[in-house]
Image 1: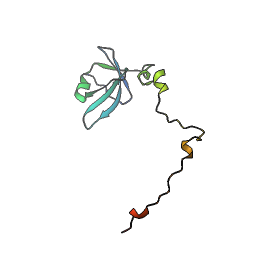
Image 2: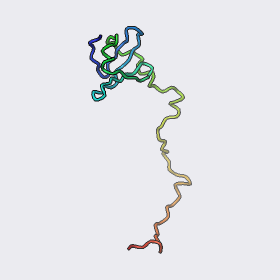
Image 3: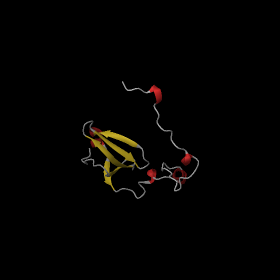
Image 4: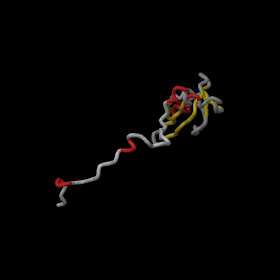
Length: 108
C-alpha cells in the first residue's frame, strides 16, 4: 500500500513493469485519477486502486511529448486556413443581388 498522493502533471513509475505515466486529472466527484502513458494512451484508477499500486515518483522523461508531435506527413495537411494576399479573380468580381422583396412580401 503506497502513501503517495496523486498530483496533476506529476510523473510516476510502476515498480513491477517500469511503465512511466503522468496524472492528467483527478476527479473528486467520481473518485477517479486519470493518467496518460508515455505513448499517449489514457486510463484511470479509482482511489482504492491507486493506494494499492506499487509505484514511485519519477521525473518526466526527455521525450514525453513525442506522441503529440506531428510527423512530416501530418504537418503538410494542417487545419490552418489559407488566406491569399491578392483577392483578385473571377469570384471577386461577382456582385451580390440587391434585395427586392417584390409583391410576395407584405407587412401585416
